[in-house]
Image (cartoon, rainbow, N blue to C red; front, side, top):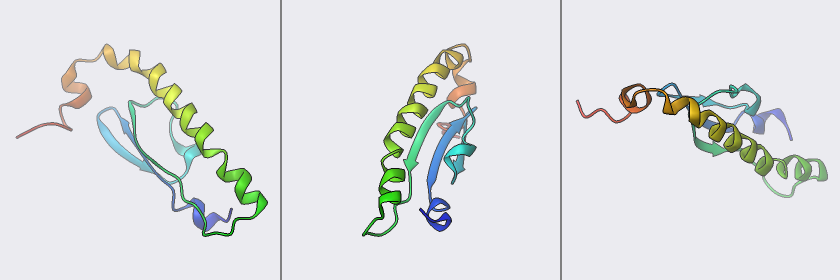
Length: 92
């Protein structure tokens, strides 16, 4: 897959109550609160064999992120709610 398509990925991750957007999967930190959006870019068809191999890896990458999210969930339970969600759901 060409670099142009990789730069169009959109991964939105909640980190310490703040939404952060990444275009490279590798830039997502090990510790985060939640995966909000996982939107890898796909090149137009027809795809080459190399593109098919790369595209087939996205589900595994999402599953790894979800595993990290679950692992980090115990860290969140120690924080008061105002730290986790106060700024996201404030009505004032």
